[in-house]
Amino acid sequence: MQRLDPSGPKPGTRARALWRLLAARRAEQRFAVRVMVAAFLSFMLANVLGLPQGYWVMLTAVIVMQNNLGSSLKAATDRLVGTLAGAFAGFLATLVAANGLVQEGLVIALVLGPLAFLSAANASFRVAPITAIIVVLSRSGHEPAFWLAVERVAEIILGGFIGVAVALFVLPARAQADLAERVGAVLILLAEVWKLETASLDPDADGVLLKARLQTVNDRLRVKITSAETAGDDAKRESSARLAEHGDTDALLRTLRRVRHDFILVGRATATAWPAPVMARLKTALAAVSSTLDAQLNATAAAARSRAMPPASDTFIAAIDAFGDELDRLRADPLMAQLSPETVGGLFTLGFAFEELRRELPELGNRLAEFAEPDRVEKV
Image 1 (cartoon, one colour):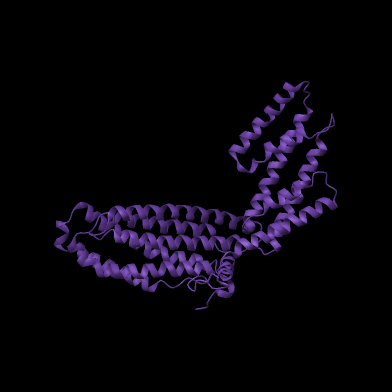
Image 2: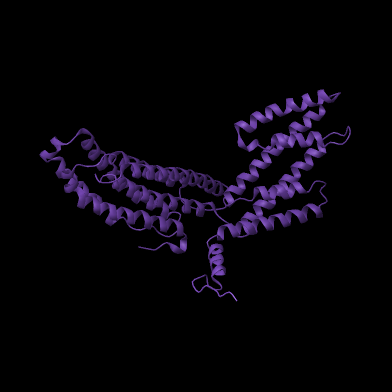
């Protein structure tokens, strides 16, 4: 009889691991529930109303269902706009007399040309060519396609309405929460960028390895910033529809981009290792900035993700001021005349970048405070 390995997984370990995985994917679970509810409601309504092609209602409801309400509003609007354009163009195509297979094919091609141009110029018209094809090819005999176009538009409107209603009332997810989460992810990556940039100042560091790692993190950072901007668009859409109230989304994203630009300046300033005398003079002040900045970025990221009030910036500002004072003393020292132009330029650039961070990082905290949940805002 084979004995169980006492060092192997204990009973229930896999179940607990699965439970932890599911608990970490609550947003995905809520999305799955919304899709199921939308599919069920659209299926039932299409059959109750006796729609001849009711599956379009279900398809639209599922397509409209997105990660947050703002995205669902955009998907529903795009779907409706594209369907209206395609249905109208398809109906016009059926009014043109086309005797013969080749002639009918040419009519369809000529109708699809402008629709294809529209879909390439504006993503809202992506479904227009498909709708036009369906309207033209689904007509029966010589019957005009007017009612087919009307039915298609009605099905899309019904499916879009169901999708938006489910997104609004069934485990709703707001774009402002997505925006705050993604801003937090950007700040976490900026903390990684900071560590790699300052590590480059050490003359004993592996410059090639640090550069490769920094490139990888910056690639991830660009993706996260783009996703934050997308969530910002969704948040503005919710606000325009009066479905949510929050802070100034544009101001938050502008401040985030400025903070990102400050780190680009830091990267340029730290591209070359400092000489030993310079490192000796600035090492203590730079270490204080490093520790406070890392703590500030991570604490602000945690506050953004939980939509709580961001931390105060007093300690970080004090460290920046102390570094600026030490840098001013170094600039007045005769040692500066012995340094290379690259080192001198890097020191001036770093001082400027720190001054920008001193202003922009607290401003970012103020902007994030506008997105904090009311019950998590501490009165001071």
